[in-house]
Image (cartoon, rainbow, N blue to C red):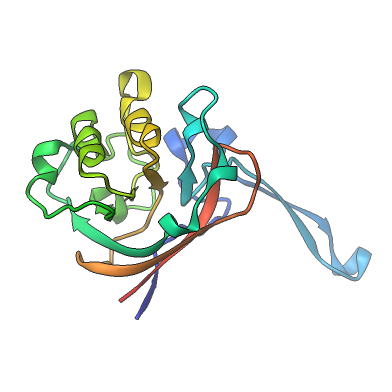
Length: 204
């Protein structure tokens, strides 16, 4: 069974804090009536929809997409149900689950159950980020458009990205059962940037 857990990009896609400047813009630049072919121009933020963050996003002079490793983005992952965490996921919440070195964890929360941006989305706090760093996981994915929310100095991002832990944001996990899957995450191949949109599929 194959599950596509990516967001569909369209003009009505939810964007972070509903900011107009983050909404993708589609423009028809050629059509069959005038040009005998059809082409569309897309203008969008690299953090739109499902995407991968790289260290430069939150760390000055941090690594970019040029250092990306598909070995981290393709492999087994564990979907963990945190729908009972209303505000945040902390170390105490993570300790209830079996987490091992080299795991790639996908967090299923209340965020997956709406197509609209929610300002009080469930996030990973800095204690949880430190715990995952200690556990030496290879990556973490969330169904929120941010791995953190209004945290001073963006500590969650910096702890994870500083440890070369991959961050995927904007997953859709509403219909995904918590268990182990084979994951394929393929970001667009845009060089030297701080984030790339990605298509993510899970195979049961």
